[in-house]
Length: 223
Image 1 (cartoon, rainbow, N blue to C red):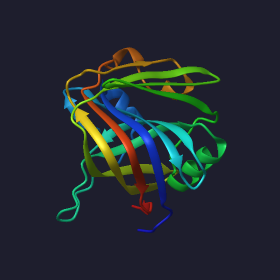
Image 2: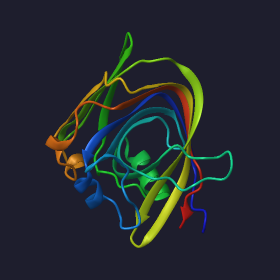
Image 3: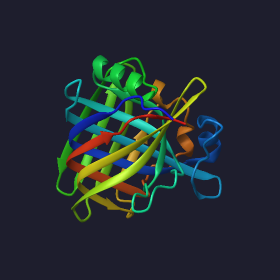
C-alpha cells in the first residue's frame, strides 16, 4: 500500500444529493472489486455533488461529480466512514483544476470547462451547471436544521489495473434531511452517457447542503 497525493479545498457552498438509479447501470459502471449499495431491489444510489471552491492548490473553481455509492472499508475504532463512493465522471471550471484532480486522484473528467451557478434563496439552494456541449444538470436542495460537523468518507478510484482508496473528510456548516424536498433534471450530455436518464429518480431521497467548509482528500492509497 503506497501514498500518492493529498489535497485541501476550501469551499463557500456545496451540495451532495442521493438519487435512486438502476442497479444495472451501477454494476456496469463499477469495477469488478466494488459492488453497489442497493436502497431497494434493483435500485442503487447515484450521488451528485457540486462545490464552489474558493481556495485550492490550483486556485478557485467549481466542480461537478457523479458517483456510485458503495460500501466503505471498515474503519478503526472511532473512525468509521459514513459511506463509500466511486466517482466515475467529473468536470471542473478550469483546465488546471481538471489536470490536478485527474493526476492526483485518478478521477475521470470530461475535457471541457463547465460553468456553474449557485443561487441561494430562503431555505433553498439552486445549482445549474452547463458546458459548451450544453446543460448538464439542474439541481435544487432544501434546508433543514444547520449544524457544524465533520464527515469521514471513502473514495475509490482505478487507473488501468491499479486500485486506489482515499479517505475524504468534509467539515463545515451542514444541513441534511430525507424529506424529498429537492429536485434534479439531468440532461443528455457527455457527462451522463453512462446513465439511463429516464430510470433515475428526479427526487433526492437524501439532501446535503454545505457552507463555509473544507474538503480534505488524504493520501491516495494503492490497494
